[in-house]
Length: 146
Ligand code: ZN
Image 1 (cartoon, rainbow, N blue to C red):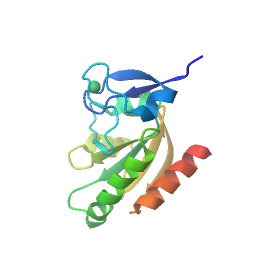
Image 2: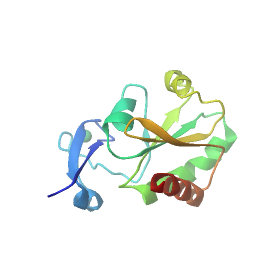
Image 3: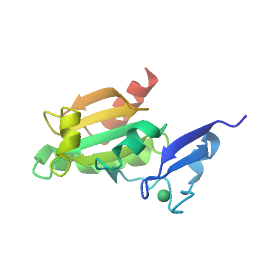
Image 4: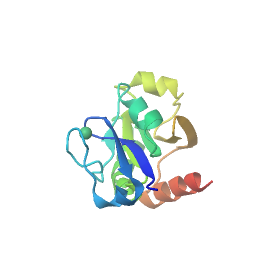
């Protein structure tokens, strides 16, 4: 029996079913034919949040940030590097709390940057404050191993 993972495309947000054994082989989206993994965080807004946080079976790590926030800017390249390391088993996304106030409110984001990890519709971990790439990878893997 082949185990498959349902995940949302970072480009067109369609759901794809990919055999787990093929996740690391650079799968493409069945609808838009673009790569399902780009080694970069995707920019996520309220319209497509549920596709990635609820309907996808991949854990979703969200960086709640804002352009005016110095620590957020400092963490951005670390979050990029963490995406390359955590894919294809975790999806990384950035939510701009200024352009997406609905999401910031829904998740009660009080300080930025805040990293929140979602898995199948549930928030499973949260960490406020900037971290480096190694810290992001370590915290995420630890939270998923629980
Ligand atoms: Zn697509």
